[in-house]
Amino acid sequence: MLQYDSRPNYLFVEYLGYAKEVGGTLIKDYWAHLLTTAVLLPTIGWAYVRLTRPAPHPPATLRVWQAGLLSALLFVALALCARGALGHRPANPATAAVTTDHLVNELPLSSLYTVTYAIYQSRKAEEGGITYAEMPQERVIDIVRRETGLPPGAFTDPASPLRHTLTSPHPRERPLNLVIVLEESLGAEFVGRLGGLPLTPNLDRLGDQGIWFDQLYATGTRSVRGIEAVVAGFPPTSAVSTVKLAKSQRDFFTLASFLKPRGYESTFYYGGESHFDNMRSYFMGNGFDRVVEQKDMPASAFIATWGASDGDLFDVAHQRFSQQPADKPFFALVFSSSNHAPFEFPDGGFELHEQPKNTVNNAVKYADHALGRFFDKAKQSAYWDNTLFLVVADHNSRVYGPSVIPIERFHIPGLILGGAVRAPERIRTVASQIDLAPTLISMMGLSGEVPLTGRDLSDPAQRTRPGRAILQFDKIQAYMEGSHVAVLQPDSPPRLMSYLDGQLKDSTESHPALVDKAQAHARYAQWAYQKQWHR
Image (cartoon, rainbow, N blue to C red; front, top):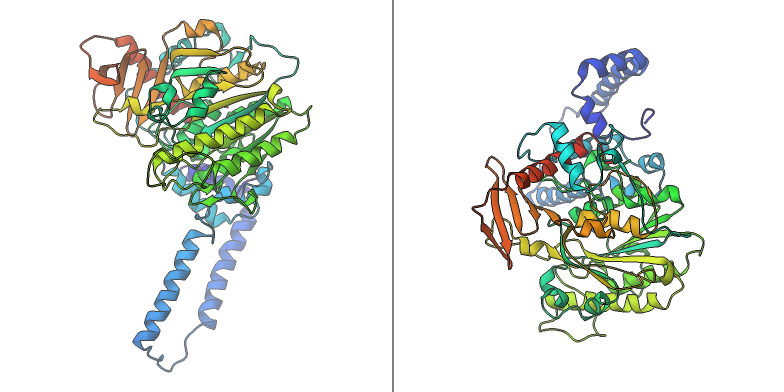
């Protein structure tokens, strides 16, 4: 706590591997504490044994029903202790992340709990996942830099090899507000505009009014993977998302951390419990100012298994956006949840697609209904003209298929719109969720240093280049450039494939440059986390 304003965390666990250095420091600087502990703990133990020594007479024998009752009570007590909370979900350190002051957030936590949790976290692929191939670091950095489309001279910080100055070609007297609507599980097969079922009439309609992505691909299959890609611009690895890993809980680049020194207030809006998947801790440690979640919803809200309905969440968000001072820019991440099994949503307002009610198709149609209502209100608001909106899915509803990697299940909708978008456009090149952060920063009229590997697709020059997407499917990673795909699998040589008309097939072509790009990006993402380059 004295050194890092923190309870024992991943640094504590990491330092356990340096017994000589750490042990010497403790003996030199904290000898009095160690001596007191060495004397005090045995004394307390001895006193406890003496005072609790059982009486000499034999203990009473419990009856079977008494033993059964006490065993049940003990089981309940142990289960409650293991959960650490009476809430819907078990406790984790994210539960205490209620302010932007890290020290304040750490005070209510138990050191024993946090060190145990840090050990648990340290087992979750802290090395950044699978190494598909070894490459020299200089070559990895060179390839990833070239794929950004930026000149070599743009990169000037050796401590963060991809850090560069993003210069917006859209300067504004007043930078725009930013609202990201992250739609739960909205794959292309549900979106009429992408050739899917006719379940999204509102999104399809809005697509004619903004910048629409025809070939946008998710980086993974989990919400936290979508969050790290959209909000942090971080490429995927086979490890768990950086939202849940230890080294990215503070000082990790996010849109919020970029916007904070520019006077923005950032808020995470979520209908459920924000400590799920460690989201609260990650956001509050990386630039966000506040969280609005299930407990902040009105008493009249429809509360389902995953929290308040999308309609209630959007109503709360719209009300708060309307109350923002005109001279104070804001960033909001609004994460929907109604389109999540078991697909619970309120009745009325739209026509069901099918019977029975609680199906994924009906949930998608409800989520689209709620989205349409939100934008109808936003267009009539004072904040509309000064706000840039992004609507994008976190991932698909269910990612499966006979292919080694079901690319068609990574295809998602993406739309940028708002009063500042003067003319509708379609971006037809292949794009990745990691391209969204630099594109948004640029369109907001902002410039500054970023460590992003994504491309600013508001720049026409970037759209003329072959688009690319990086997809993580469990232990498999794919790098797709146009219709060419390099598939990386553990302990196997790279596999070259082609993706045409929704079909992934083996290719007989030789494409060594594509393989190099795939391996370099996979290795870079590992190092960016391990070496903390993404700052």
